[in-house]
Each structure stands twice: as C-alpha cells, then as structure tokens.
Image (cartoon, rainbow, N blue to C red; front, side, top):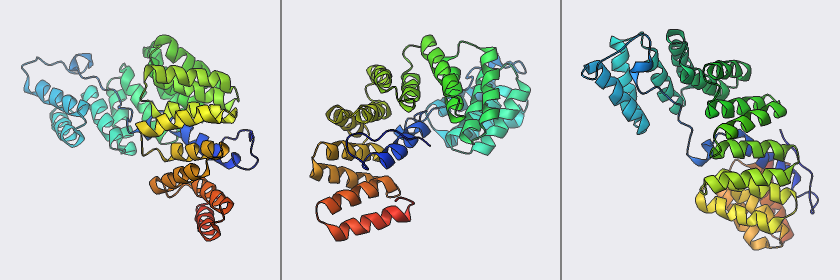
Length: 329
C-alpha cells in the first residue's frame, strides 16, 4: 500500500518499509497493542427517548449491571444481561447500542452492525450509536457507509474528538489524506491530550515524506502516553527513513520493552541494528520477529539476507524459502 525512498543501504529498506508502514496504518486505532478501542454506550437510560425508568425499577438495575459488566470487559455476562433486558424492552435503542458494543468487542461485526442499525432506528438522536456504527462499518471495509454514519454522529455533536479521529481513519482508508489530516487536526484541537489522534496525524505526514513533522507528532503522542508502543515504533520508522538509525533503535527498544509481542517492531529494530553494523543483534531481532509472527515474509527475508552475509548458507536458504512461501521475494 505504501512505499518510501530507500536510504543508505540499497535493497535493505524498500520491502521492509512497505510492510512495516502498512502494519502501522492498519492498526492506527490501537488494536495491535492489546488496548482495543471500546465502543461507547450510553450507560444511562435517561438519554433514551423511548423508555425512562426509576432507579428502583428492576429493569433499570438489570441494564446497569449489563453496562457495568461491559465496562469491566465481562463480555459474556454483559451479553446475557442485556439480552434479558431486551426481552422485556425490545424497543430500547440504548440497550441495542450496548449489545452492538459487546458484539463489536467480540469481533462479531455483522451482528454488531445489526444491533447498531436497530439502535439508530429506535433512537436517531444517539450520537454514540452512529459513531459505533461507523466503527464497525470501518472494520468491515465499508468505508463510504462508515463515513456517512460518522458524519451523522458529528452533525449531532460536532465537538466529539473521537468521531473526528474516526473520520480521519476512514478518510485515510479511502486515500483522502488531506481530509484525514484535517480530521485529525480537529480531533487534537478539541482534545490536545488525544494521543491516538496525534499518532494518526503523524502517520499521514510520514506517508507524505514529511518525516521531521511526523516525528514531532509521534513525540507528542508518547509524551501523553509513554506506554504507547505503536507511536514509539512509528517514530522509529520516520527516524530510520531519515537515516537516523541510532535514534530509531532507541525508539524500537522502547516499543519492544513496552510490548514484547510486537513482531513488527522487532523486525524494524533488526533493520536499525543491521544498518549500524551490529549484525548478531540484528539477527536476534529478526528471529524474535519470526518467532512471534511466523507469517511475516519481510522478517524472513531480512533474516535470510543476514544469514547469507554471515556465511550461514543453508539457514539462509531455509529462511528465504519461508519468505517466498509467504509471498516475499
């Protein structure tokens, strides 16, 4: 999807840049870190125009228990409780939004879309239901429809920074990079502490080869969230594109220490080390990458090249064959 100029060592960075940057953009919303975005639900029924309940009402307590279980990531329990609530109150749009959010978190995207559709039909003024619907449509690759849904959310609440960030993701997926940049800019204007939006804005600048500016955005992201492994990785990538390999290595060290299972960052770390002439350490990083994700042809290619450089021809041949079987060169 993306490509960048090769810097300093011909042939080493080109395929790596393509794969690494594709990964970074694909997970711009944060899923790679295990801190998956949790769709928002209206946890109070007072916002639902179809139903109002007193605090003493058993139905109200059942819904609140379902919402609490969802917030605590007890998804099976939350689904059971909201299902029971909807048996008695099938016209409650807020509860359908909660059900959709549970299904989204379970990666049941078609089912989640059905629930969000029901929610917005019953309560067309629920801005979060429209946003959540846009999120699941994005996951399903239906970007035009996702954009329409998020636009509806923004019509109801133009100051929702999360909706602007999602609009940026959709615009980026559609290849509308200027629109994406503007949306991320609006998100951080509304919420200057929105680390994910700063990171996403940096990715747009990185793709446009404005890497000095991109580094500033990634630095802003990690200053807000020092444990933001993806932003550390992305900062390292921009530094490496500019040939600043030692600084890039520091970023990859941070990313992999925060998230030891981040295969792409181990691969990137290996490229930085290789460019610094630290070949044994580079090989170890590539091996870490393929151990974590044996389906990454880039890491296998990098490993094969380095093994061949060190005279380990049989091992290099095996690594190259593995890369080729996965679609690598």
